[in-house]
Image: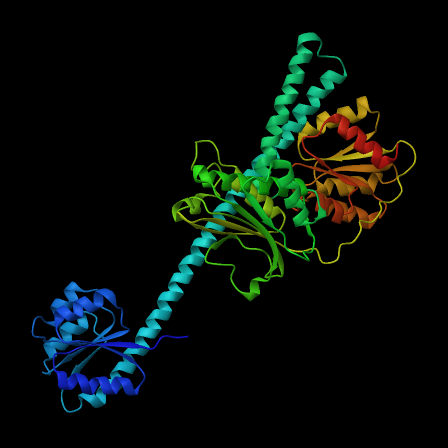
Length: 512
């Protein structure tokens, strides 16, 4: 319910005060009175009226002195003399109007108050609009910053994965062909282990970008939470599962990593004081009301109904300054060097088309809410076409020359395949048009100049609906597995992959 307009009259004439009080009461406005400048200052220190009727000359001070000492709300100046110099001085100090207390004063007062209140209302609306615009601008700048960081991280990780693939392929060939005997073989094996760790870091960079590979399956969030708590310990955690939740499309491993990270952060925030971490799931329609007094780190693509997973702790909470940087890569309030946790969680959620909302108050705690679009009508994946018989030629499509040379030599020299090579999607389409009679399988990179892999395979399937392909990438613009499924690929190989995994994948695809 809207509060009534509150008018403060600063006037030392008691008779006039009563007349003004009656005028104000007739219009349903609230009324306050101060008979001296000191009384006005004391009242303004505790109340905030919508408008002040300020007498210029009071027994203990003038209106100018009051204005110098008080945080004055919008005001109208009244005076017993029609001195234009006073009017000009007061208007310069921000007066909305100037009224002379003559025979017309009481008749002119209501109109002057209404005009001033209208002006105040417009100014308030403009101020609120500016604040909303400022908040929206800050959200946009943050989103652009995170998008730029994600694009940079994704691009670097993509290039690294191509390099790692070429290195891993050459190291594995050295072991397979026996060209690394004795101590050298042990060194190559250690190098492969280090390379695996480097590859894992590159994939975490892809998670930050929101463009990393993920498996696509229908998940029950309640079961996911229960399994995570059972595997990692539920001490100090309460879980309230929602009923009737629809499934969500996601990668159970990645979402378990997100939940585990959020719970770990909550435990750190609780510290030695302890407390209960509360996890809950439910269905929420954002059109039915804002989820609370927090703000969106990444809004969901739709308004709902959405499946909501919340993690709440009564810990130390975060200041606004910390919250503004909490999702920046490598930022941490703990020790230097930590901090891929929240940015990685945000990237994974972006890759799932999910939203993230946060509320944090210092001394009260933090609440994070994850919003997932539900799966409406899950449909089974279509069965792939029957494989061709016999040993078929392979079309290897990748824009990295070192990787082309390494994989091409392995496929020809070690596995005995005939290999036709293309450096991008356009070359792949032309190569398939020429050699479609002998090609049994395409090994297609996802991201290439001129034409991406999924687009090239779409054109190839228009030429030949029976064409078969494996998507190979460490960086997929359409989140890996879903692109492979939606584009008709038989599977997905995540770079860098082992040569044994490549051999087995090809064998399965060709039915060898």
